[in-house]
Image 1 (cartoon, rainbow, N blue to C red):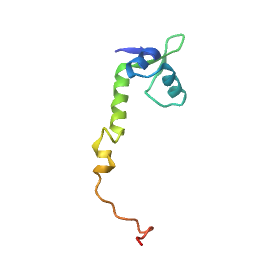
Image 2 (image 1 turned 90 degrees about the horizontal axis):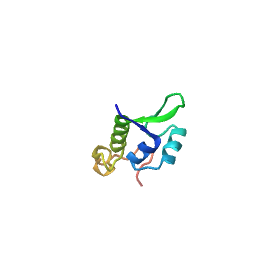
Image 3 (image 1 turned 135 degrees about the vertical axis):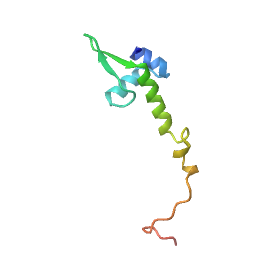
Image 4 (image 1 turned 120 degrees about the horizontal axis):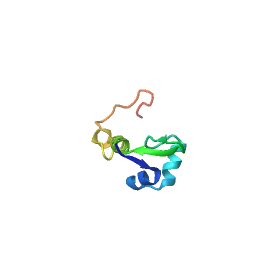
Length: 83
């Protein structure tokens, strides 16, 4: 099981360590945890990979099922009748 520090995780994801710290503070981004007596913030490599896959699936450009251009025509709402 591989563990990465904030610096290593940021490099792995192509982000700055500051971005990961901000995301952690806001409870966003990949899951992390504190390890050891000094409470260093750590990331599991497989968790980072899973988080990236989730991001890809949530992006309509990577997931054709979410792309609005692939959706069929929608009926107009009765609340807004056509003129």
